Length: 414
Image (cartoon, rainbow, N blue to C red):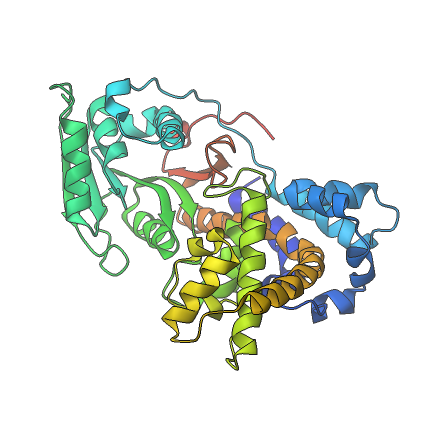
């Protein structure tokens, strides 16, 4: 099945529920999409164990096993499962010398080894590898050495690039490849100057950068390897479709972050339990600020505050935010009252938001399939697959494209 047909399958499931995607659950009152579909009673009747299992990726299974589940909700879950099931790659991770990965986090090491292991046939036909948003330069330096190709890094922070290159190049004289160059460029604004015989690589190219990479590669006719993430990182209010096959699909920036959700205990930055506590702390903070007479919508309570601050608990978070807003420090009674209210509301909101979280992976796959279809419409052969195991990162969907299907890495089936 081609990418345009795969995209059509996704849109058949996604388009009827875009109202769910567009409307987050910000209060304990059932949203209109939930009430109108008659799902509220079922969701609010879920027990604590069922809720916990659902939040850890078991919601579809809960629906399949429940005689009380609304049939259309059960059908939606089945459709999501069908459309988000991806093949894995039939390639092996490359063995990278330990000295080349000194100072690199274990998860990043695994990602580099797996991605490099998928690229030999694409790299063999490239005159140059372009690392778009190359960060500290780890991938670029390894690719130059392993594939004996010139590698160009495009990123906006030259000091970061230089530190990455210097560290990787100072491997006791072991770098013998053609070398790594970098260009300091505002990759969010300036054109990506790709050439026909390039291999353009984006390892976790965030937001609109991934779209710009696809558009530039399509225009240049070069090969591509793209792992996407953080789709909400865009200056536009909506993400317009790249392909004609997407039928003008647009997703609001506020809804694009839904694609980052991962139903798993061990998150990228914190555990699910820690993230739930942080969300509850933010909700309690919102109630506290409203109690002080401030009109704050969902998310506005954290304006000017790093979101990770919520991991420190309500007391620290509230004290910091009140000081920032030049408000009196919260009293113990205020904190207890807001925490209790948030706990009650959170128990309801967590249940009501399950259908929306069910769609998170579908939103991600819709964007990736749209990118794939855009390249296919330009005559590229395209493969979409799961690149990494989830313990390395939940951002594990990869898109490969080439003018020659034989260059694409082999896939291992559904």
